Amino acid sequence: MFPDFAPRPHIVAAAAAPHADLVAEAAGQLDALVPCEGWTVRDLAEHLLTWTPVLAGAGRGAPPEPASRALGDDWPDVLGRERADLVAVWSDPQAWTGTTTMTSSELPAPVVGTMALCELVLHGWDLAAAVGRRVSWDDALLEEVHEALAQLTPLGRQMGAFGAAVDVPPDAPMLDRVVALAGRDPGWRP
Image 1 (tube, rainbow, N blue to C red):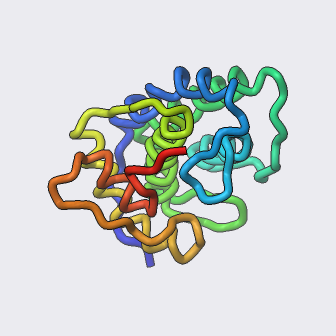
Image 2 (spheres, rainbow, N blue to C red):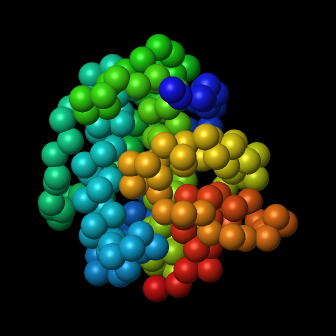
């Protein structure tokens, strides 16, 4: 049912690296739009607060039930701690082996690890776009994320997690190709 997803624990920390600065900047712009249709920074922050611990728990084989979480004054710090936990879990090659659960579904661990990795890059880009900042990752990392997304997006589109791919030239920057594959317009501006 699932293609073979390559474990990628070696790039999880680098994928998360820009987040702390982006979250700090976005924290003062909660009503700013993000590239996810109909969402604001507040919506994206609540999404991250809801799913980051679930993805981290899945890496341990025991995720908590997803629960919507409203933003408290300390949400950037809370999210920072939870993101650090997610990075620690999915940077361990052992987390990428066997199966795990994600809410009530059993999935191959590499599928969930790939979801966590792609979330870090895509939502990092979303935050950067919302606050009008450029964000970048090494092209080698982005090539791996693009390859992973190419496997993940068919399933994600069935679940409503990704929109249709956006056309970009084949020589577009790798980050543009990554976000376009996930259904985001690389030229999006608030």
